[in-house]
Image (cartoon, rainbow, N blue to C red):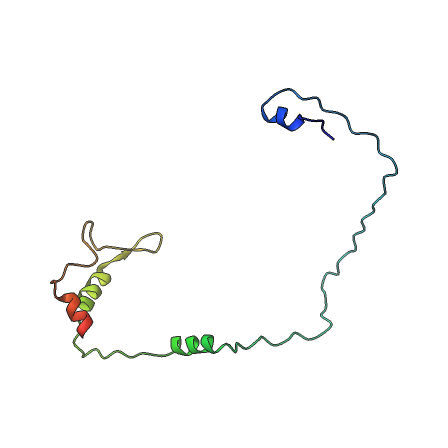
Length: 123
């Protein structure tokens, strides 16, 4: 056990005297045994079938995501959708998998008239 002030002296870089440990008496002997593991463990019971999720919210999300949505190509698309499609078709993917604009300095989304936000909210 270090004496009084040992850790304070050590913290400030002062020389400290390290006392030797007292000789051990009546030290218990601990033996650890390792048992070899079988190469192929055979299960004692058949594997249980995978659990079927019962959470209603999870089931609702799975049902929603598995829907097939068909788009009518003859519909008139909004200007923002058309412009975004044009830009994304010309964009390239970098080494990290991130879309880059078609040309250096060209923005991905162009500016539209100020009444665009009104059109989006009212349509």
